[in-house]
Length: 134
Image 1 (cartoon, helix red, strand yellow):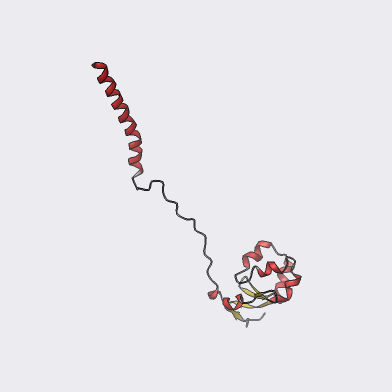
Image 2 (cartoon, one colour):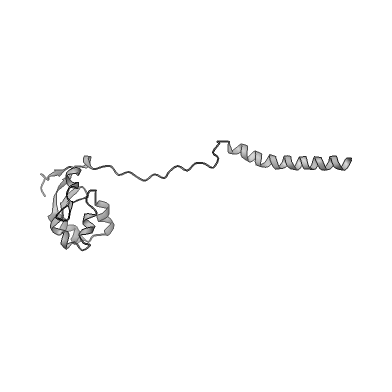
């Protein structure tokens, strides 16, 4: 491909998603793989499942051979307009609520965990002394 490569909008590429008309986006390039559908070692379903999106990750995850990468040049029909490709959203883990829902400071809880049993022990000891002296 020369310097005058055709540039396609993402929406224009995504409509080519059938076995008789299949285009893929890989590494910023647009490939018309329609003629390759029957010859693809993984079958045409693999290619069809990658239409309508940036198929770069799908392509790289398989680990294609050098000869497969060289073969891509004959199917390249242009470039993708990167500004039209939807941004990938990264998965964010949901915020877990803290077990202390009422927002009581952890320091106060630790003090109470120490003082309440101590107070109970003190009351029990006081009752024991009081009942023994009478």
